[in-house]
Length: 223
Image (cartoon, rainbow, N blue to C red; front, side, top):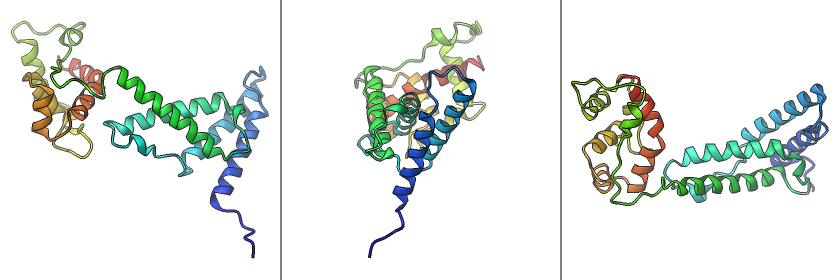
């Protein structure tokens, strides 16, 4: 006896294919505002359905990377952009989510390669991290009767908005941004920080470096 009822994936695929075909009816280069609006609506619906489908790849190859969630979200945004820009390239012979996850896999790899080129995901063990005091003080001069380092340390310790104490390495609430920053200001090496907080060197350094701009912006408000 055959099953006349399509499975969930089949229904999902049909819905996504319909949205793709709808978007294709209105070329991206069309000068008609109505066509552009219809294309945008179809693409928005397509992206929303993909996002809520539960069929997006978990990208388990990269699951153990520091800041996996940050990489995941960035790669996903690049994936959605490519889908919207190149929806005409979709081949209906293949399920839509297969096509989507192939793009997602490539974009995730691109994000990881980009970060590794910056030297963020793995810094040398003897690397001594420092706060960019020159950058912090570029617009806001530090009070003359207090050293830059001392003032920054006081701000980090008081943490007026609890930003530094609420940011911590995933799975290790003791390894807060506040704790890492204070160790950094003490001149600790990554090896020492790693041992004290019981986290890999690459995890500690990546966590710190990826938040550098937020740290500087936060400290500037209180200098």
